[in-house]
Amino acid sequence: MVAGASRSSIWTGVASTRFLRRKKMHDMSAFRKPESVARAATALLALCALNGAAAARGGFSTDENRPDSWYIETLPPEVQAGIHRRGEACPRPLSATRAFARFIEVSNVRFIAIHFHALSCGDRSALCTADVCLHEIYVSSGGRYHLALSSRVRDVTLTRIDNSAAVEIACESAGCPHLLRWNGRSFVGR
Image 1 (cartoon, rainbow, N blue to C red):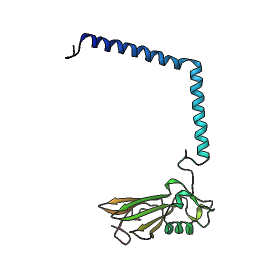
Image 2 (cartoon, helix red, strand yellow; image 1 turned 45 degrees about the vertical axis):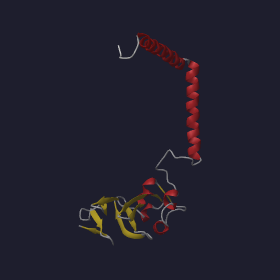
Image 3 (cartoon, rainbow, N blue to C red; image 1 turned 30 degrees about the vertical axis):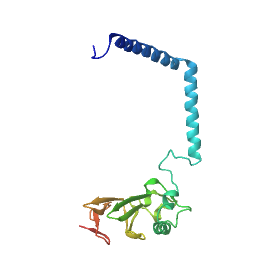
Image 4 (cartoon, rainbow, N blue to C red; image 1 turned 30 degrees about the horizontal axis):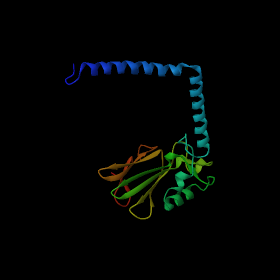
């Protein structure tokens, strides 16, 4: 017996536990009734219909890879201007998927990598070939953004190495630099 507990309080606890078990069993049996199942199914279908209607209105997206002009419009003006120059062959307004722009900040310097393979464009030949696409990196150190790197490669990834920015490049050829580091003015190979 637990110290400080009387026999009656322990018995009350046992009785309460038995009552709760019976109550739970009774409540769960309600879900086995056909009308309850039908109500639950109707509610689920209504939620699915609302989800589709909200997505159609732009309330929220169920597909992260759906092109949207928002991914371009929220970029700094200098970066937008560069994108519009490169995407002259593409229909307006320009739109892109979520993978279009990637950001990193290192030592108060901001970097934006633009992946043109994620830009929706009818004429892909202006931006991409079979295996490679245009990638650009813009840099800002508290002011305006400027183009620091432009290359036609498979992919680029912004990263941080020893408290400095770097870009990992996935290349077509074995001779291209695979890692470039930011030296304060440009990206250089090691």
